[in-house]
Image: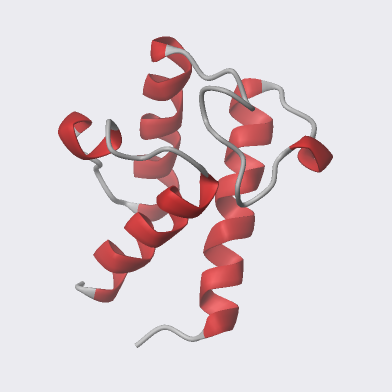
Length: 86
């Protein structure tokens, strides 16, 4: 089972991915940041994010699952859930 520090590590990696791939300032990304409304992610940005997550965590997020993800916390929880099952 992952510990709270593991969750923080995953969350920080996701925030860094968002910042790097989408040219968003790290300080502008919060756990509650909406991917679309706050961070302005469009379909192309979503594809970039999916590829980056696949590369970083060796985890593929099916598009059907990705459509249910609304904010940074949702991504973190999704990754945590899938990594714990490995």
